Picture: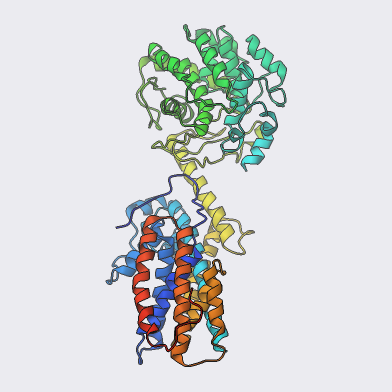
Length: 156
Length: 458
């Protein structure tokens, strides 16, 4: 579904646009407004929390676009209603390339679980995707904090 | 990292004469730089300012004495000198990928009997050395070598010529990708890989057609290659005396299928350790075995992979706060995992907070936030702020909604502009534009509630 545009060069792709905050903000705020509009009287906090969290991840993935494997995986996960089965199954390829002692393997597994789509990545790719994911997470957290802060200011 | 290595070789000072600066900087494996300078110095341009290529060396090269003042790092120099000097040992020196010192001329009496292209080679090298940032597209330096190659099936020397050329013309390739060069690149890179990976591997000689992917480099060899390999073995023994293997290659710009990291060994033996520089170019990366390391193709690939991983780990170290002093992969990974987990928990927490605050808010908030977040980049943001001044207290919901909605309209415009400027990808633009339609519909619907339209329309 997504064009798998991979950076061809050997190094890390340090795209300056990799975390585009305005786009992320737009996505997120729009989703927030939508949630606010469609929130029903009796909807619980938990449900709203889930929706907002989903909106946050969606805005993250949208801002990253289809350039990144993790954003593609995240978009896939968000768009497909059914929960993915066997998401933690490591492909043979990834398992073979993690030729490291036990603790490293454990950490690699933990990282794979954390990063969306991490199960199907090689170790090298996993590290790169983790870096980008961390950048986007930072941006998203900053955005949400700004929203909360702004909301807090206005309601005071 | 690259610059330090450049400094080490003093090249940035020395390449004043017509050497395009890119040669020093664009190539992370700056090994090519000395090679290029060597060739240039040897053949055409005296790099008198270079500490490693003094004028006497140039003269010596010109004179064809290849047995003297060979700087360690500039094995190409030796090769070129060898080439320029018609006597015996020359082909062998070339074949050694520049590792051959001139110290063992006696070994080479069994060298290639024929090397008719010497003068042609010298000519080409001379021509080739006149880089000076010039345009090489018109220069078909390698045509003669191409024609030459098939005629010398024995052609270890040829291939090494091509190796040399490859190094220099890789630089050229960085400047302008000429199609001729691409061909050569394919040929030479394959040869180089062959050389680097296994000394006893047979050098596939038909550089003519692009034997691009012979990273294994061990296969197809004609009988003549065995002799070549034998000679190369002898040369290898000689070359191990040498401190450094100065032969370096840059990566070609044109993508090749295989990738290996290009190694760069320093001149002094002391720096045998971590001199590898990873070529950040796309495409073909040449790996050269470090001194004292296995030259197996597997181990080389493994080393490439390890270096990639270490580079990414370093980058992650920068990202994760407080990890600059942490050493070791395991600890680093732990930190990374903790950080990602903490970020995800933060997102969760903030979303809960937003959900809690959510019901009491209205659109004005988003407008304000949009302005804040966009740093007021455009004029519409200023309009936004003016509108935000209106609701000092909390006026009726609808009035606020007005300003909020108009603010949101502004913000959406601003967003769209910001997005369009920042995200040139077409698909994203489409999606962003599409998103505006339902947004605007909603806004219009809400606008009808209000009594008065906003004072300053944008």
